[in-house]
Image (cartoon, rainbow, N blue to C red; front, side, top):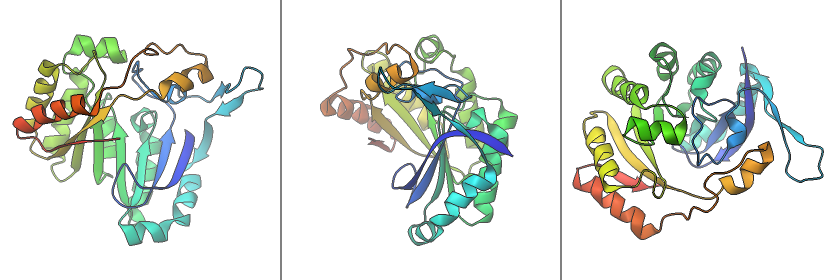
Length: 260
């Protein structure tokens, strides 16, 4: 079983409990206008140019499940001591469902904690095959209005919300954290945050909501793959602004925290 990744980060201390290895897979069904890693959106390897005069560097490589497991085994002592493990990220792991499921299955057999970051825009059958090997899933909610969601990401949101509800009912023991990127002027209205809170409140198995303030990492990454960054002039929200959105969520009885 082979797949395409674009990097592996070892000894990470985020995106899940304990010390982790984060495997970043290529390919994503969405094309969010604020995406900080546009080099992850296409499935196939591509050439990136960090300087005008360089020869370019290939982004993405084909690896086997065994290749990934070999790297995991190097840090197994840290996983056991810290209750850590592996997190699949991207891109989005759902874009390579069989490869993702195979990695997670092997990781579970090794006794490590498993987590995944996803937008959940996929058919349920493929999604289910991955979820059954997870301890924790992070799912993004970009916007509650489907038309606005499509403007921001290229896809409507009905399938995403439906899949979140299916996780809640069919995988009640799976820890689920919803992440909401806060993009000024795009999805940070009181109305949208309240609608998100009400949706989150309907989920029985939800652990918490994380608000992720917009950052400007995309300004430097888009030129690498020859793309224009649409939000070049956007200013990140202040901590005060994000705290006010957090308070709206808390008023609806939601456990919420501000992420990095």
